Image (tube, rainbow, N blue to C red; front, top):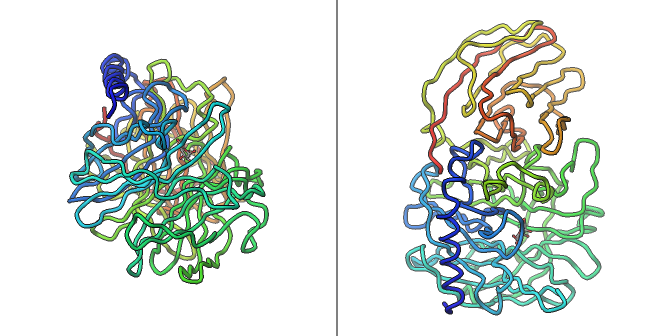
Length: 485
Ligand code: FRU
């Protein structure tokens, strides 16, 4: 490292020390979600299981609670629950990444960890250049940069980023998020025998391709894998117009499912399905662990919320990752469930079986709090609507005749409320993770998920249920331990 980059690293650790008390005393600091020690976090990067440990890297601007020049922050865990911060993994200190070490992925080969990321470079006139770069590590903690391995191919703009690498049938493959010079978002495929020399194979999906129609001007953060015999391409398209309840956030994240032919470079796929219906979810990434599980983390944020004043900004930090979710391909759909390790967080459980909710608002003595897990398994339904009201400002509502599930929260900017919805034929189960400033809701064992940040008065513990009709359910509640600082 050069002298100036060394002092930059020092400046970051000084900043962490300087603001540590403000950050950790913030009542909205989350208890079991990964967050930046200071500054802004965005995408999860480089998820990998290496030498018995889980590694999660993240896009990090340590110097501001806004986007800017990005580093790779790093956490390590034995169990996906208890995380140790590791030293900065990648700093923007080379000519090919000087304006940001952008998103990417990790793989393990011959006992070493390899990172692939996008080096973001801007010239004096603010023109962007992107290089797909490689870095290698023996110990999974310090990384040696090897420089660019891919330059932008003909026909594409400099919006060319977020390499995700995987191994299949004796070859390495890489997918990259791209924009054609005509302005179509695409995912392109490369292959390599040795991780250093990469061949451009072509696009596998894109806007105005494979019957998808007009579908965004840029596709970010692609991830391609096979799950239970189905080929799945997750990506985050930019530029979709809202259509009813779909695509309501500024940018979306979702997937195409189908059959991929790596040799013919074709991917026959169906329609795009969003992964999460809440306000704050973007740029997810997955990895496989030793048990063969496909695990996903998302950024529990979105581009628009960077400009809105989240209250944590006054304490010099912003954003978090979602809890880890296990993916399953079932009934033609990706299901997402909280990983079972999260059960380690449970304490002081209470349960009520056969609770009848009827007409008036109801509270259950042991069901309240600010940080908890709640499961509501519905056994009988004779109602028009049922809602769970969390604190003063957040409501989950199922409407039987419209067959819609709604998440309502207070806007960050004023006292009005805002909504996200999804279509849901029946409501069988609500599984909810509340943290000090977030709610993640899994419906019907992961058929639909809503992830959102919420900023109620910090001590608001009240939970009430209201129903138009009668609903009978089994209700379980646990407090959840604090494992993140
Ligand atoms: C997604 C994204 C990526 C990029 C990174 C930069 O949120 O825009 O495409 O690599 O963030 O932080």
